[in-house]
Image (cartoon, rainbow, N blue to C red; front, side, top):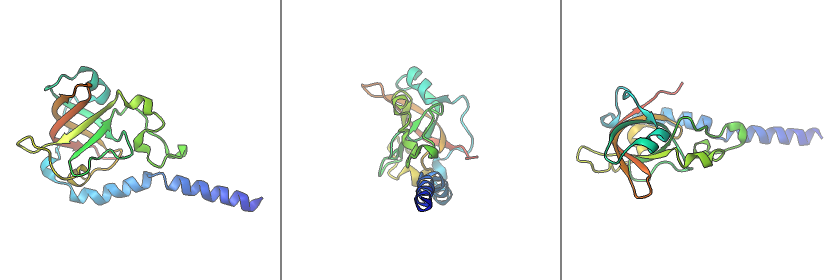
Length: 173
């Protein structure tokens, strides 16, 4: 019986350790040295609205400031482009205790993500997408809180994209 308890305890520790929390923090420290300061805002934009509110109110072409956490799927970053999805801070992401290996995919609250997600696309001075991953360009990882100032774009389904050249990354506590 003790042998069984040992394996259960060892499995639980392995599961908790593999949930990504420490890995994300380590990646933040490693990638922050490669960030391109040309696209990082030195101060947080005022009056940033959460993603859910912006999805309800922002019109196509409107200038706005938006706040959210990088996530919404297992792969919130777009390969080869400085683009990623963010989720409204009010939506809770999965906790390590829930056994979620990728808490940034919001698998525990996926039904709430649909109306509280937006895409952020970093663009250069000519408005063209920056051809470098946001992870490299901005030194960010999943669950980082960002505040962006840019222009709202809507597609035919009402999805919200913000084109920006200014991303403020809130420091983690």
